[in-house]
Structures are given as C-alpha cells and as structure tokens.
Image (cartoon, rainbow, N blue to C red; front, side, top):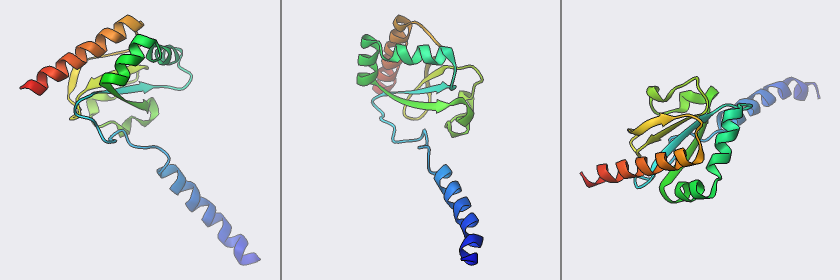
Length: 134
C-alpha cells in the first residue's frame, strides 16, 4: 500500500502532462489549397470576439465560409502555434486570410460588420483564384 501511495503522485503528474500536450490540435492541420484559410485569433471573455462569432453565423456569411473557407481558431495565448510570426497579435479578434502556404491574401481585419466580413471573404477568394491561375 505504501508503494502505491509513493508511485501515485508520479502517475498523476505524467497523466496531466500527457493530457495537456495532446489536448489542442495544431493550426497546421491539413489545409485545403482550394480554400481561403482563415486564422481567427480570439480571447476568452472578449466582447468583440463574441460579436465576431455571431457575425460568423449570419446566414450569408456562414454560406460563404462553408463554401470558400477553412477556419482555424487560435486563442491569443497560444499564438506560438501560428505558422508565421507576422500573424502574432495582441488585438482580438484578429482574422487573417491566407492561402494553404500561409501567404497573406488580403489585409487582416478585426471585429467588423457582417457585410464587411462578407466582402473580405469575397476579396480573399478572388485573390486566391487569381493566384491559382498564374
């Protein structure tokens, strides 16, 4: 019994660290070269981030997101998972529009109205298509 009590803390520590290291998928998930990759950097408790989440659900925005985009959500405290240093920010939300090679398609945006977000998606998609034709 004493041996089990001595080993138990080590087992708990190992379990904790292995669970923490595998809990978040990396933003470098399989990227679709035919889609605009959106990195949405947000912070828990951020009112502007909550608003932006609602913008993502507006029907005409959601339709474009589903059709043309692949979204990767990143918490501002986990920016070390972002593929490029230029993507790091302190402002939330920040939305980056990139291609599958993480090259910027259009300027990044913050919290915007649904029609502005719709326009940004369409501009990013047009730029992606333009680059694909080259």
